Image (tube, rainbow, N blue to C red):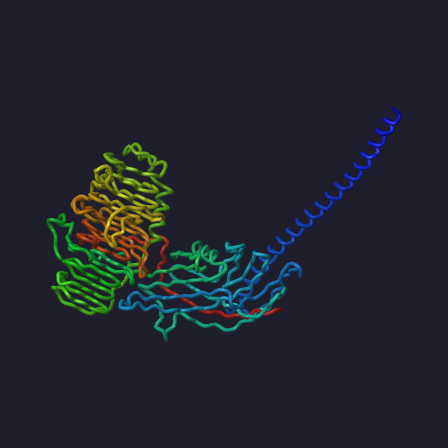
Length: 599
């Protein structure tokens, strides 16, 4: 018994000792954890303070160094006040570049493209791990990983038709400095430059500014926010570009088919391919058919098989009538070379090129956003028996949907064997379709869009995604990815073949196919207007189909029995321009150099 009691007392004594040890251990661990956490928090706070202080210092540096670079100060000294253990400022004279290219589109044979400036920008950078804040080109930017944001604007302005690009070039050898000395190193004016025939005012021309930089996304943000130009960002090349355009006032479509890309063709490549014209102001095609039209290409015009152009031809490069059965009834105007193995009924003339048609991307995106933000989708159910509140419009086989005058937005417009009636009797109809339009057969019934009344239908198609469809030709590929498609037996029709009443406005990368079959030809009445400019991004393909109106795209191919009947009524159509397109009149570009050394 005594042994038992004694044993219990020994257990209690060991437990108390062990408890003390554990308590001390827990306390030590907790203290270490608190100290570690506290140290990490303090370090993180210090790093944040360091980045914020560097950002404030570079903003001050931006303001004071710009005075030096632009010739308003003979020099300056900036103390960033950074603790030695929190980072330093370093000059990187080889960081990034800025290029300005000017193209005079009136020089039609070979547009006068000139590199106005191509300058290494340099930068002053503060770095912590994968984060930086840097001064470049007169602006301040912040980055982390692959992303970047704008802190303060570069020296770059567009105001009332005048583009001013003061390129600030940062040289010098400052390494690991907390204080920097800035001195001017000369200025060179690049535009205007009378010795290179670069004079103000500019007309019918483009100016493209491209920046390659660690902060290229932030440059793109700046271009988009503070300029009215057309902006593009290339992640693969780490560049941002903005295009400014000087255009004549809006004018009609002077040609049945126009291929706008320098590297693209206008090709009549299939048996029975045919082009002629008519004038819907006097009557439908069958009553007013003529050979008064013209087809144009900035690149080559190629005519093969027994294809016929019952019109005049203008080519910015070659005209190639390649087979004995190929025919041009009118004149053939060429720039580089004429190959005539067939028949040309009119005269042949060497010309000084064909001007391109510039993209309308900004217009399409702007009108699309406006319609998406304010539309009549809620009323569509009462109008046409279809619910558009979810942003879709499907018209299935045997169904008919009618939309009255108004503004409507959908993601995709899918007509599979049904009919969409656009009734313009009470006014115009605007359709904004984000991705694609597909009009095709289903269950043996053709799809159709039918315009009623005398009003205008404007379809804005940003072409953000495409749809896969099946048809043969142009390489015999069984399926294609396109943005606008009219398939076998399907049609877009307008009363009296009046093409200006149905207009498709699309950006340069849009792909169009109007493709039927021998027993079920397709038909389209209207204008597809998706110019590429000089680059080749989009295309239009017509096979076993009749187009009444006009096509404007980067490259155009007419396959077997692909026929385009140009509506001369389009001559009088004033094409809209984007609300954000710059009306460029004057350009000023100068390179301002400065040296940054440890102070």
